[in-house]
Amino acid sequence: MELRVLVADDQALVRGSFRVLIDTAPGLHAVGEAGTGAEAVELAERERPDVVLMDVRMPEMDGIEATRRICRDLPDVRVLILTTFDLDSYVYAALRAGASGFLLKDTPPADLLSAVRVVASGESLLAPTVTRRLIAEFVRRPAPAEPPPDGLDALTDREREVLALIARGLSNAELAEHLHLSPATVKTHIGRLLAKLQARDRAQLVIAAYETGLVRPR
Image 1: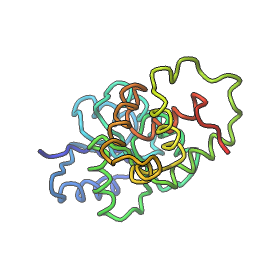
Image 2: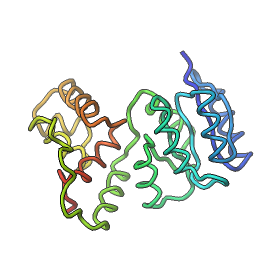
Image 3: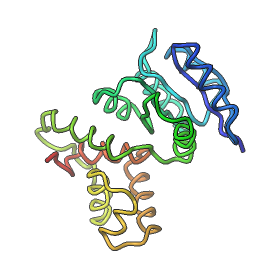
């Protein structure tokens, strides 16, 4: 089955280039192009793509707000942010809005196509560098007076431990080694965390760990 991809960028040449790249890749198909954030939301509602490639800076409505609306109203649609601006504030805002990944536009074509498939599979594209940016953002923000109540009540002690390590940036393989668990068991714990915290993906788990006070920035 082909993965359906929507391209949102305010530059027609960039949109066209991404569309050609997607349409020539096995198993991928571009279902439309949007030149504004508002168009991206409208097309996403109509086409229900698997993945939206979303630019940050667009007229009428920026990519962050468009991402927020799409992720709120269309929970099965994944958003992959693409931008030329490697700024911490964009990383945090995009992931907080519900994006499942963040890439720069100079990412090699093969890596971009791989990222689309990863995000469409339900995983997040959260590299260690992005995790560090998220942590840095929380370091800059004042700590809440009290953690939000009941945020983690449904979690077992082991699930809290796994969540804390995810927030520190450990990969699945590193989690398995650190906790002396099999990779399959680690995936099971992560799946339960996603369900219990109603998180879309790993990126949202990192944010949840900090916002509930489970993990404090060092």
